[in-house]
Image 1 (cartoon, rainbow, N blue to C red):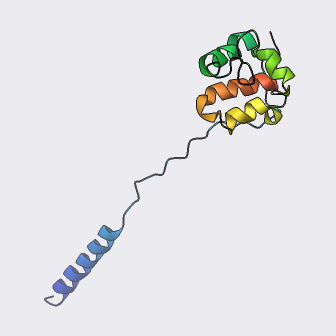
Image 2 (image 1 turned 120 degrees about the vertical axis):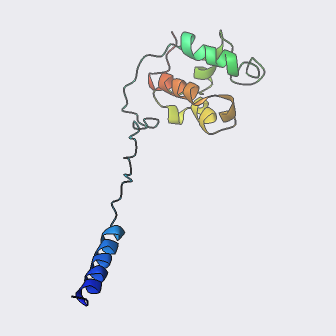
Image 3 (image 1 turned 45 degrees about the horizontal axis):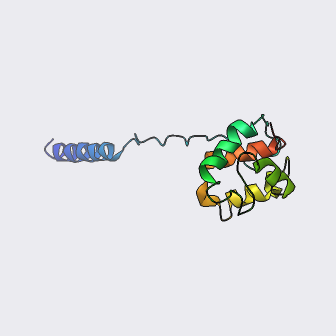
Length: 133
């Protein structure tokens, strides 16, 4: 029995070590949040009505007319903006990616003057037909 006790103690100690080395991973990786799809270049997206006078002109007044008020084309003053954009071929109705106004605001020299939400609003206006109300 003297020889059995140390062996049992050694076996019990080895068993405890094995159990202690087992671990359960409590850290659970949360699923990544699902973002809504980007419809920036989606021409099939639902197009709503955007008011040129109520929504687009205020952007031009706040951000553009400092420079675009007659001496630099297009003239974006309230009474002249629509005709200057349409007659100067700055806007192609229903085609923002082919409209000089949108391209300039998105990737061109005017990019830093406008916010992302304002750019999206102008894009939606062009997609909706670039109408003058």
